[in-house]
Length: 101
Length: 171
Image (cartoon, rainbow over all chains, first blue to last red; front, side, top):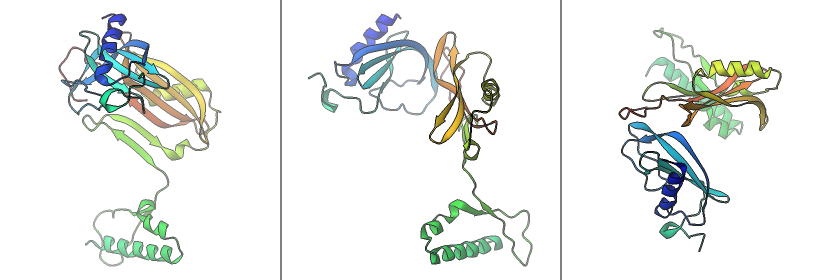
């Protein structure tokens, strides 16, 4: 998967993870990521304990100063493997107020 | 109850009573943190009971992987004090490399510098893990060295063999 496609996959996932549209793309890099087998994130919750494996993933970062969110996008199929937000990062939708509104 | 436990209880009660009488109630409550009775060696003889009391000098923390027993980190507080920059950087880096058992393949040096943190001067060396040109997310080795004592006082080692093709494993 190209960087462009990975960023596109992460951008499409923004609303699903309640990230306001005012966040802007800042960085993307490929890495080897450890994930819990069979677990896909619903939010920024910690994955349950369990057997793990590694995937090649794109870490795509968005920013709305001073907050950041990061998506790990599977390099093979574009699934979101992990989602992280910086402490206090603004939320949109039912869990928070959209900073762009 | 074994004789040494009865004696220890009596002795600690005495210490608590004395501390309380001197107005050090807080110290009395924390007595177990600072003092402990060493377990007796071998079979306890009849007659007079001898106690060996040990005093806590410092914190020493070790973390192990509960699944594999692999060493993750250690930290010895008393070795961290009164540091300076007298140890040459090259020597400190080599000591850090040996302490962290830094592998010859895949370890990329991120930093190797002296720094001041709160009231402590320390040398920090940190490596990230790179495999087949990709950074292994979350993996690193970090060693902190007291330049004056010329000794390491902290080591963190999170390092895995990437499992990209195999079945899920417990790490």
